[in-house]
Image (cartoon, rainbow, N blue to C red):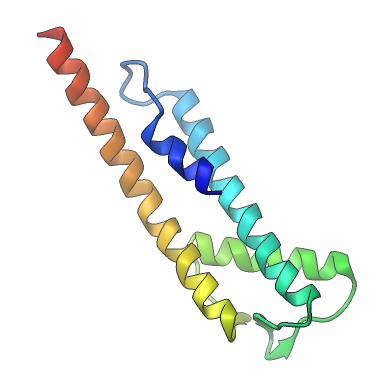
Length: 126
């Protein structure tokens, strides 16, 4: 996940303001972070360290059900949709805070990077 975020500062836009490649890259970055955090939540749950409450209850059920819930929780955290039916507890609160921070700052960093690339291109053209 860290290496994926690091690429934000290495990508060249190719002189375009915004391209399909940029959109796919950003989508891939979001997906990588979402999956990574979902697996972190799942690993904690599988080790009997509850980090998620689903409808007020600790996660139980099959591996597949816990995996689905972890992905759902990760997506709700990443895209700041919010919690109503599911909530972090214990160490999950710290992990969710880190993920939410990344989810909030990623679009801003992407826009800043695009503006810097455009300014750099304008300076080269002069």
